[in-house]
Image 1 (cartoon, rainbow, N blue to C red):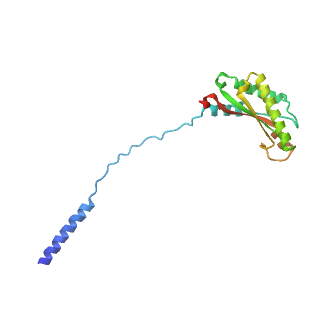
Image 2: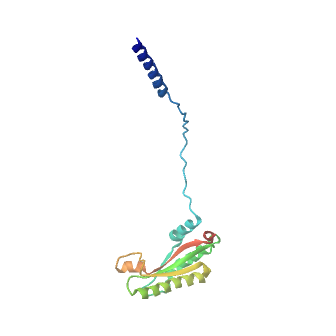
Image 3: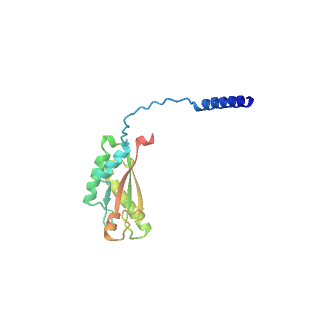
Length: 173
């Protein structure tokens, strides 16, 4: 009987332990369904101006072979650029004019020709009222072709001066 009582006591104790382990505190989690928030992309004023210049105004003028004189088409594009740059809301924009060449000619010759192309575009913009302090120039010569092909169509594309917005006065603060 002693054995039976010990077994019964052990059984009761085991059941109590199991019952204690089986109970858990339940955390109540409230689920709230909400509509997903639609986030509109925010375009900075600088990005807006860059897009406007490239897509609507025109940021590139082209040159003839071994030339840096501005064609009538180039002057038209540069007049649009000057109008854009002298608008009151764009007066804090600074630009870089990069002169480019096709692959023909030496590296040194093309760097010099690219510089003359960039300077010709800058001079025309200045003559139209854009402050010279807002325009920097650089020559990439034949180092950054728009079209890497080696044919007359590619060469014509690569003989250009490209105007790029580099900063605004607001970026410098």
